Amino acid sequence: MSEKETLELGIIGAGGMGRFYAQRLSQAGWKNVHVCDLPEKYETLKEEYKDSQVNVLPDGFHVSRRCDWIMYSVEAEYIESVVAKYGPATKMGAIVAGQTSVKQPEVNAFMRHLPPDVHIVSCHSMHGPGVDPKGQPLVVTRARSTDEKYDLVLRILSCFESNMVHLSAEEHDRITADTQAVTHAAFLSMGSAWKANNQFPWLIPHFVGGIENVKTNVALRIYSNKWHVYAGLAIMNPNAKIQIAQYARSVADLFKLMIQEKEAEFRARIQAANAYVFGGLQKDHVPILLSDEILDEFSLSKMPKAKREPNSHLSLLAMVDCWYTLKLNPYEHMVCQTPLFRLWMGITEYLFRSGTMLEEAIQAALYRKEIRPDDMEFVTCARGWAECVDLGSMDGYEKRFAATASFFQDRFAESNVLGNKMIASISKNVGKQ
Picture 1 (cartoon, rainbow, N blue to C red):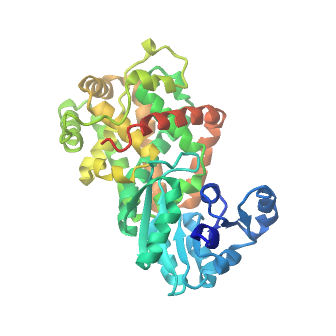
Picture 2 (spheres, rainbow, N blue to C red):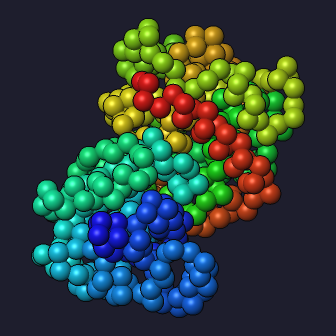
């Protein structure tokens, strides 16, 4: 019999990614795929999977005792307690993985609570359950295993057709702090600022256009998801706290120059950041995003483009300033990109590599006083999110997130459809950098 018929694969946690993994593994021909959630959800989950090839077990003890490969798909905040509970029951010689977005705490929990004869090879699909995994990065972290067990993990994960990236837990957390945590902080700040100003951006003239379509759709996409996905990544990753704090400082520093209309100093700072991040790109560099005309297809706005007004793009100017200040090269992190980071990187590159658009943004930032209230609110919200992360407040994060999510919830369905189309469009360029 083949290994797909004899090996037993188990997933502890039936949230979005847990279900996604169970479904893909079962569809790939693995005959013994098991899943569990909290014991009180057993009967409900069993009913949901009654017509599926996936087998539902009562709890993590049942998964741990029988399975040869076990993946913990639980919130980063709870990985320690869940592994402490079920880890000691792990089958001798089994392989254990985790799907949390912060790897060092996860690996530490495995090392503390798993028997010494258990192999540890973790993973992290760099996308959500609604994204086609083909061609997307899938990080594999080998913490403790033989070559034979490691090769088995690669065979199990091969059914996703993802681009496997082999990183240590430390490398993973350092890179994802930039590719995910700071990106999320920027979009969260946008959403909070729009909500504070009681604005729907697609109704505002200076929020019309290709770049603005990406900002709006991605911000709403984030707020339509579960808050804990972003909270765990930001609060439990020490690297993320540093980068989010610097982003908020960059936003505030640039805004102070804007309101004083210190053009020479403002230009010098933008130009230095531009040269650092984008100055080394070759002429044959393939742009990440498509044209502004194509991006217009993904608009929530019915406003004619002719009515578009200049925007300071403070969120993008500050991002490049943040990378420059921390001496980070975002292109080095494209190996670990998420669809959202690729979109964020794309609109930033698009702005900074267009002399006309960048000059328009600089002029708007310095001299268009009618957009100052929007920029001021963005500064306030960026600082608020950074302080929330620095305090390590999960409760505060949830409340801030929920307040903004409720403001936009009526447009989530439409924005997610447009967001999926945008991701599909840019995915055509994956691997061409």
